[in-house]
Image (cartoon, rainbow, N blue to C red):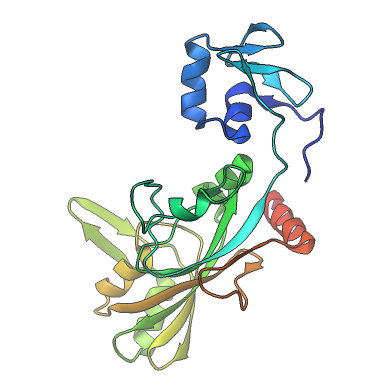
Length: 243
């Protein structure tokens, strides 16, 4: 999965993955004629790689950094919104890395568990796209004992309403793991979905932890810590994306 000189990227994507700015900001730079490719005006349709010379305002950008894949155990209290001035923002961790990384998806501030941090935009887009139905597994604690009916309704599908919007969960795998605890595997990622599903059935979530994304498991990684994905995990992730 290492970058190779002959792998081409769209110009805006290349600039963003280089860490210079976001992809949208890169597109603006191209439109403003501030980008040159091999001493020619850069175009949105240009396909570039590390053998090309990319300049922004006469500053030559370095080669793309190698792809990075980190598994992070997000604690409760960390906000996944990227706000530089917020001490509780995930930004405080991301800014400590020598290359620009971003989170694949998000977890609520009051939830914990597995997050993937990467500079691989294609991976992020594929994992988040709703058409691919990638699975995510969670352990959930509730405020009262579970019933067989609750487990069955959660598995079959739950509907809820927020304002004028109606939502319906897809059928999913649910199993009780304790008197007030269950494990659920979702293939969709609606906002605070598990909490709203439980609320619709008269339950309140007291703790929620994501323990897996596809074949990538949180394991015994300590809260607040991160580690690089192993080669086996990276291969498993790439295999999952081809299914």
